[in-house]
Length: 322
Image (cartoon, rainbow, N blue to C red):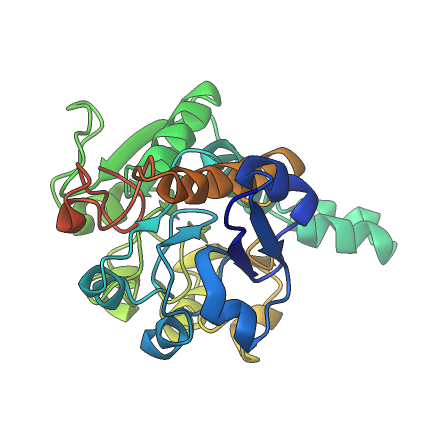
């Protein structure tokens, strides 16, 4: 038998799912110690696990980092690139799950499911007319970002009879759906759903000025990355009526620090799990393990955010879109 290679899991990674993909010549370690890290040839990384220069220093023999998902704001991609380490991602694998999660948040808020549930529980049936129940059909959905997830949200929304406008300065957007600027999509949408990576240009892109561009009673949903929304501004928007509801599946930091926005009755909060359905989670683990296997076999991963920098082909943007 040849050399046994060590691959580590950073964050909870199920051995029974990834080990068969990695192969019999790989020793997969779910909870690595310092020795395991020094021996590691590959790492499968869960969301919110930070990989900076010190973590890379602890893994001097690492050949590939495979992220389950597409967001890499917690990974120092530039340092990885400088060391010749591909940062693989799994674009498209959980896109439908996240898109369904965005629609779930939208439906919960537009249909006032939270307030109506509380009304029934508190035996205030006669007050039901006091709670607004909205419609998706005929409403305008504004998408900020048009990668795999944004495209799937568009398809689901159109199935509900919604009009969809999209702002993405890079992606190819159908002309009938294209908005020329962020302000344009913010000003015409009844519901806004964010699907962009977190970087210096998008951090707190939804601030007080952006919310001021919106129509009164707008619903705002973020199932993308924490840090895109200024939570103080969002709370002010809810209190003023500019926002009718806010749905958050991602936070900055995670887990989030206490904030009065999170206690507002017109919010829906989930702990960054919309992409972690049973089927999609398994698929992302398998795809990440396959990326590691491909590199260990001397090839390149199917998708990496720094592929072009390393001469591996077309690079992806850092949210998994080409």
